Length: 193
Image (cartoon, rainbow, N blue to C red):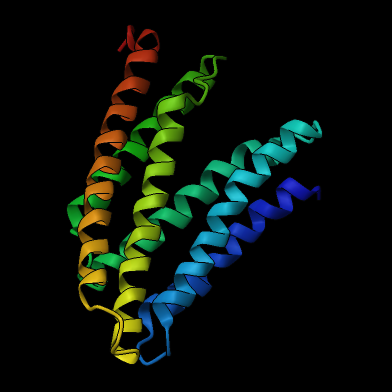
């Protein structure tokens, strides 16, 4: 297994670790540690693609698993956020709907011998989702720090959460636009329906 594929697998292996920090109470600085794990997992997404392209190590496994690993990381974290009452279930539903829709369109196109390639809007969608999630981790970690270190202003966590919600809603908008763009690009595959 080449290095980019190992990084993709590592991203998947981070998921249960992140979930433990999100869902198990009583762990000191769980939001900080969980956020660092999520940040490291997100970093593998950037690195695996760059290394694969630079070293010509693109494989079928990587083409399949890289986007799947991204979706698993983001969706599992957002679902945990819903359980922790941090984000609304509707956010997860919108993102899941888009992912199922685009994956289905790609399967139909592949059945007809065509490929619907990733575009810049899909990348923007993923990056904004990851930034929003990291921001949420940061806001919760700030709350952890202000509870322990009372000299830190308590409003920092609140402001970070407001900013993170703005980015999260931007990510939802990017998700919707990205899905609409893929549907538009794939319109020729649905003429016979």
